[in-house]
Length: 298
Image (cartoon, rainbow, N blue to C red; front, side, top):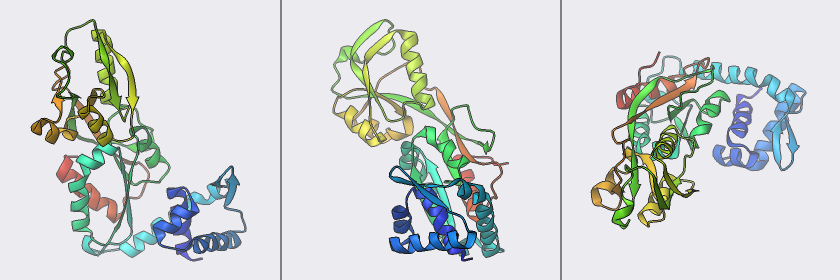
């Protein structure tokens, strides 16, 4: 049995399709199909079935998946045995919400690659709600997320440095629309967000409810950059992590709107699977995260 075929199988599950797996592995699509057929012949089972337009893992495939993961983990252990970080190969998969990847993870990624330049980094940005699931289902090794206070029993979530939230608006907002402290207001503007279920967003919603400050219906966008651009153009206001708007607040393209939540901090966490083997690649990432974010790992 060729372990390359097992890697291909896992890549299909991580990327969601044969075509995306072929692109990531730099294979022809026919090579991916051929490798899966070889595995099916060796295992004497069908691994995938077509459901709608998607190829899904069969029940038999799900049953043997833990054994495949164990084979690949043990193979990686052997290949990494006594290797210095600079000699490591293999894969490290990171996941985090859009805002954290853009504004927090860049120097961390750079430091990881400086220590282990030959590893393959697979980085996925996803909604905060999906970070835990990515760790639970094995599609990511490490996640960085805001602490929502509710985690599956199968994951560990040591604390990171907290962050502050910031209510932002356009410099072109009328002066009478800048007040978010006086209660019982009805404002002709709406909230813009890209992470509606993030802990800091829910905190702002609760604050507005408590103050009886009523806004127009909200608008949801796909990225933090789209949110900021829309606020700059006076399409609404937004409550975002403070680290994501430092530059814009300094140059005046965004305005901080004062609230009673100013200075309130929100915890962040590093998330990884409780039962997962800590690979040398993950150990490198843990060292860097400890240095940059003050995370204390068990």
